[in-house]
Length: 300
Image (cartoon, rainbow, N blue to C red; front, side):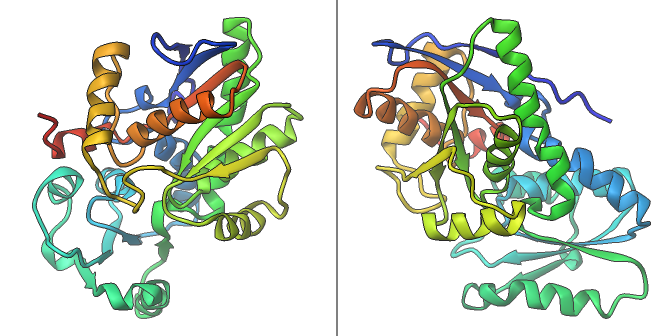
């Protein structure tokens, strides 16, 4: 349905003392739908169509990359939608939410108070039971089993990148919101018996929760990864001047647009970890998209 092969190329200004750093450009797989989401829907969308799903119940935040992605597909394939969105501290029509509202009417939104968010899955499934048509509850980040097959294509695509570049990657860096794409990468490379160490930047969960999710999603906990946390703008969704400076640095030094919520944090923290851990060999940083978020912030 989509082209799921993205290029990898060398970075200009990353640590070079014993290491060679590359970036995987999954951000180039799509515009309105970012790379990691495109991979998920490559298997999830055919499932929804095969099961004759008519109504999508979407669980998300207003600024969610996945909300914006699935709304585009919902309109194209004529699904009805109901979006269960977490009530923000201050609702502003900007960023992804501004774009999502092009596809979403107010009566299709159910705002869930922050203190009730832990019960959002229960609320969504309760709503599903009232429908007279086939419905599907889409968990945050499209982190559902039916998306795993598509997400596994990332690992296979990295093997193609290695072949094209004539290198083998010793270290890979990936960010984790819900953690589903990171889990798929861990799963995929373990299946392929690839020897790279995967460094997972945990932006939302702690390591214990990520390991629990990993076991739930793939049925095991491989040993080919390690977890680390942001050292600045530590709260999920938070942005400070350090991260904004990283956005500007990537643009000027690498010609890369990186959103400050996910990608810029990953590049910033990867740069630091490569130096502090004295990592050597070929290193790949996975840019998974979300570029439309960039315009919501002021970088001056």
